[in-house]
Length: 146
Image 1 (cartoon, rainbow, N blue to C red):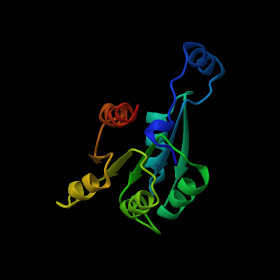
Image 2: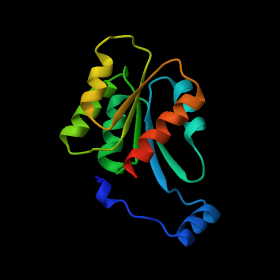
Image 3: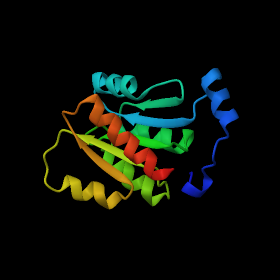
Image 4: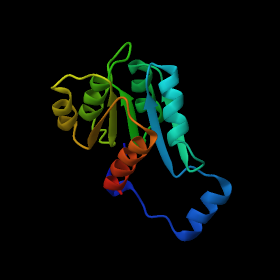
């Protein structure tokens, strides 16, 4: 579990070394039960400075958060087998995991935005979306925690 106060500033030398050696500076977990969507997210968000972990259902996302955290960002679909993305996020918040979250969904439920807002430090991105929209939403969430 990483609070904003746990984050440290990197020196220029550390950043240069990370760029040369391709050491990840950020860790993102992405969760979606659709393999094509998971691949799109990985390709759109991945680069040598970002380590990406993947989950294909809610149970896998819970395991990753518990065993492989902390993460700098969680990106999750809402509807997934075993446990919906919002259920996982509510459990994470109850466990004091305050990682920024990007919730992606094709659902048009009117209450979805309010549920995402109640999570705190979260943003809703409705499907279909373009890669520029995805990257902008991720950049907003990551910048807010820096």
